[in-house]
Length: 223
Image 1 (cartoon, rainbow, N blue to C red):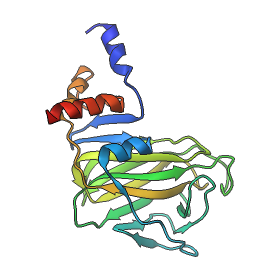
Image 2 (image 1 turned 120 degrees about the vertical axis):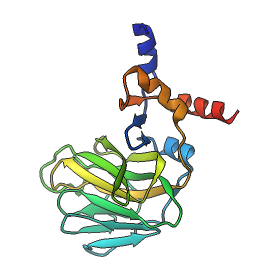
Image 3 (image 1 turned 45 degrees about the vertical axis):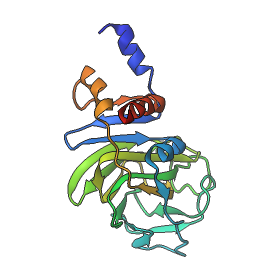
Image 4 (image 1 turned 135 degrees about the vertical axis):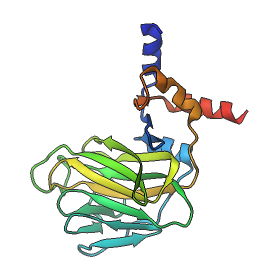
């Protein structure tokens, strides 16, 4: 394969990331609209105002807990509408998915304040790792570093069901980040056609493709 073919492949770079692993495959998103269109996920009920710190919270099939001392849900963000979750300490957040239906997609609105109100302490540009689990078995994982002072989004779609999501702040401090509206979906991802280009750089390599390319492949599979 010549260099122009490789350049053509990387020309599809966008907000969609296809990752193959020993556990299966996932697609991560930073575009809320693309995520909702592709996965048919639905928003969960809005977060309530907890009126103070809590150790757990159940909302519409999602059970929130944290390894940190506590967290609160309230109207803390000037970028995200409604109530958001703010964690005391490192922004580690665990979400158990208690739906009776298998879950294949998960997403959330996100705000990291740098100069915006309600930042606590010295700003550190945070990096997060998201792990998808089926009970104790790892289904897949990805990392994100969202832009600051904006309404951001992070989502994931999997070819394997999962019932727990662990969001871990791997770089950062105790300054605030906010988790807003959450989304879950029951449509399974099928990616066998999409995975073929990954063999160019070896198994397990992450390559980003434009959503238009992925949809074209999906249409081809329906014929």
